[in-house]
Image: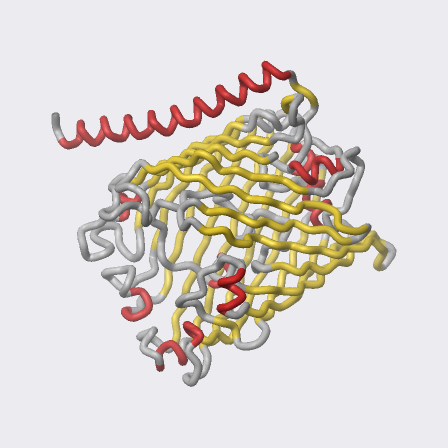
Amino acid sequence: MSSRGRASTAISGIAATACIVLAAASVLAVVVVYSVGIRPAQALPSYARQTGQQCAACHNGFPELTPYGRQFKLNGYVWSGGTWNLPPIAVELLSPTFTNVRKGMAGGLAPGFGFNNDFAFTGSLFYGGKIFDSLGAFAQVRYDNVPNTIHWDNIDIRHATRSELFGREAVFGVSANNNPTVSDVWNSTPAFGYPYIASELAPVPGAMTLIEGTFAQRVIGLNPYIYWNRLVYAEVGGYRTLSPRTDTTLGIEPEGTSAFQGIAPYWRFAIEPAWGRNTWEFGTFGLATNLIPERITGSGTDHLTDVGVDTQYEFLGERDSFSVQARFITENQNLGASQALGLSSNSHNLLRTWRVKGTYYYNQTIGLTAGYFHVDGSGDPLLYGPISAVNSPNSAGWTLELNYIPFNYGGPDFWPWLNVKFGLQYVHYNKFDGASTNYNGAGRNAGDNNTIFAYAWFDF
């Protein structure tokens, strides 16, 4: 058999394995539903029990939010209407997940895992819902099988009140959270942007901006906001990094991390016109900080400013739904301290990232997503040399994903708040860490990191 034939056979076998995983899980779900009966489904489990709403009321193929879901979050997670009076606790399981990369990794995809074709799982415990009349929370503690750790995850505690401003409805609120953009209600910003789930085992590009998760769960912030006339949104706040000891206590690895000097200001402004079944948001967001590189004092600070622009269009029909999200982020890096410490060759760099994706759902059950991502910026031998043979952060590629959500309009009698999402995702790299071929100087090509990722996502 030719090398091309062997490759084709291998790819077919891998795809078959992924499909078998999803098919088995899907069949199990269908058997459960038809054996125990169906009743109207609810939304995210603890929120669903609190509000009495269907999942599709809050989510366009969860976790993407609908206008009602955005309103629920902005109003502090406190809306009621359900009959459940117990604490708003929910559980999430991502089990199983299956990862295949086109070319395996010597030594395993991660410590304790095999060369390729690996299974993994994660589990989370949530407090999601009302605390008091105007105070609510989204709070997550997570177990990660890949690093084998228990750690806090996204936290968003909100106080919100409804009032009027200039004769129009207004919501005034404040969010205490641990991840810049986690307070946002559109899925075009990083914290809840696409991809909503990705393999923790597959190689990923090494460069990203600060606001794209670099300090997720490593900071604490307080952000006041206003939402006026169901049209205009404004949020301004600040973040402070946690100490290494606090990181360790909360299950976050502090080694090699940098720190903000003082408070890092954060801003978010957006406008969202609505007509018929359509909404269209466009806005800006950003973060600025004086950064102590690797927490090494005595050489001053770097200054980094992230400025993002984003847009989201959403159409929610009775049968068909369609959404598009896009964002562009530019990061201006003044690296005087890093250069003095030998961490950067340049005193000034630029880093730019952009993403766009479109999703179609049929009857809020079968979904198809296509996305494109791109990273580019200044070459820097000291900053990017450890990950790139050409000292470059540049990466680009495509994502395709197929989803099946069986319980958006119905759930089993034994647990009517169960929600399940099955996914098959393919990631294709045109460029990886600066090059299409031999990007690491050891013969590995961008296409060697192409990934097939299959998952079953359970919330209950």
